[in-house]
Length: 172
Picture 1 (cartoon, rainbow, N blue to C red):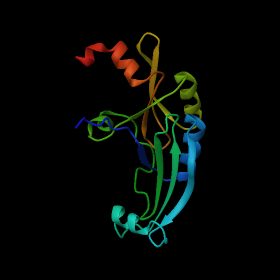
Picture 2: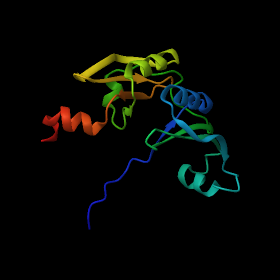
Picture 3: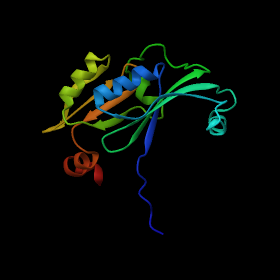
Picture 4: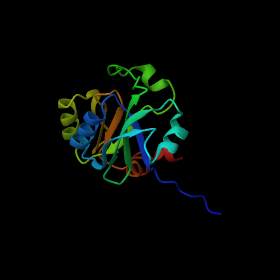
């Protein structure tokens, strides 16, 4: 049986304010709203069993929005209400603990113009990490933290183009 090449479907982000996060991701990165911010409770007629199965009986209420990127990868925005969001009250600055603690430490989106997108993000509360970089001539990228501390890379080419064309030393 041939090995299946799995496709990336979605990522879920927990934030203290779902409405603000939806506004930020749609205005800055151009994501489309598939499902607007909706409140879900473990007492709802539809979906309560799944909510309880995934999050336990303690999960009483949450807000959820579904966004879609330009290549139809989903971005789920969660705001946990009861029990409440217990993430950092403010953005945690990027340092060695941020990227060495294990787990996901950044995700990347392909954009047409790294400089323009970073400028928009900064005016909307993002924090730049290292400025705009050129890993190879003609290719730009940057890292930033959104207003909630999620680390995002912006890249103006695809991962295949970057590594198969420009960084062939990694492909060996």
